[in-house]
Length: 349
Ligand SMILES: *Cc1c(COP(=O)(O)O)cnc(C)c1O
Picture 1 (cartoon, rainbow, N blue to C red):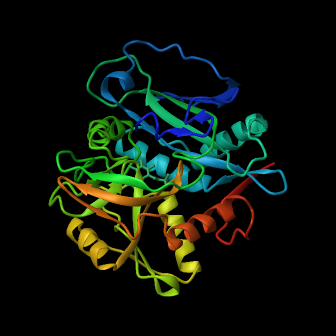
Picture 2 (picture 1 turned 90 degrees about the vertical axis):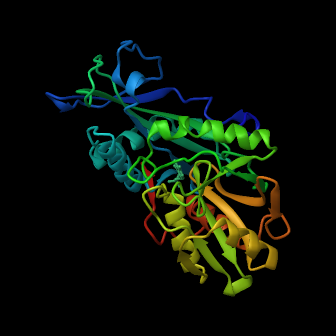
């Protein structure tokens, strides 16, 4: 991510943390220890901690929103808890019980919720992370782990207004491999993606787009976000997103938008879209919109695409009506402007 793309209004993304944190230790003998809510502070870490050396680190990202009645609610914490478990499983780490995850998040929101102003552009971003803390450099899963939860107020990952981004298709690098870690939120996936992101930035584009690692033909994700394509216009428009595979991260925003698209009466499909199709169908006007989605930035329109020397525009390059309608439907649930029909919001009392 470039410095400019992570600046959201006056507060750069992920810099101004709230006053508290939650810590939960796990040891092989005792399992999960009692959670501790304490003032935000630096850690004292053994230089031989496994996580530092071998990357046994998984994380999540979820948000809490202030509602019209002044209360705060967390978006789909149980789904994030489950994904955190599946990430831990893949990295041979202990799985934090769902209820402990949800309670930790609710406790921190309750303690630090006053940091979240009553401003519909802002939300409280919650960052749980689990890493191997055992000081031992043997090549085996660690026997001690530390769960940490911190929070910060954010305006959205890119900007409050969804400005369209330009994307660069990475032909040189892969984000994920079959049988690898692409479907879980493993810290190393991000480290391995930065060089491709720098390449995109060097080519004058905002974000990198990943292709499947085998055929290098199917469009998978944009940076750390899932992708959607819109075919057609108006009520008959169809919303398409790549089907989930071993190399795609199952985004909770992706899942939410599929549900909201169906509710709004759009046809939807989960199917592969090739680069050639994307380019050709933008040219013929079949694909009218493309957008990316994720917890941090919610919905981000894609305005143009670069593939080596080739380039094309999506629609007229501006945010499309289906993109904006789905973004609005999602923020309406967050902000309590509509009934929570799917039971996604977890109020904190
Ligand atoms: C977290 C993430 C997403 C988006 O997931 P959400 O649950 O919608 O935030 C998409 N792709 C990657 C690679 C991710 O790490």
